[in-house]
Image: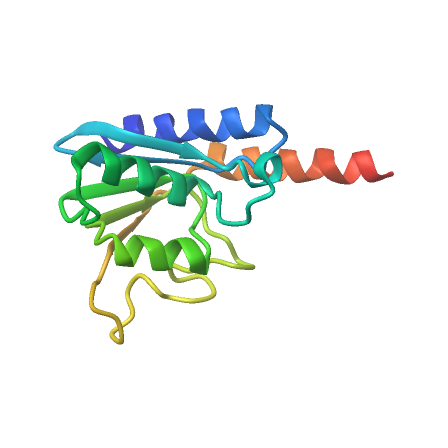
Length: 150
């Protein structure tokens, strides 16, 4: 099932890429059912908080009528940044499945470990999926961006 849900997050990442956004996608699952999806839209909205994870959290909270997502899992193509990691902790997401790590700004173990900090009131179970397609989407996107600047 993990692979199926990650593939759905990859579809969201591809939607972001089609909008010239950094290709990151996220989905939230409850009882093996997708209840929310999100992809980056911060460039198109000029809103630095419009990351895939934040959008998915807002939609999931609306779908279940509660900000507490205790019994929910999130699948995301790229390791969440510190802002998103904080939102994941605050929303009480139970498990986080990550497609690829972010060695520059990861908030779930690569650079910071917000989701498993003993100083916070919630601990998120992390599962690294190390998906090559997630990595390739990001690498290709930034390679294209660098070419555009030449």
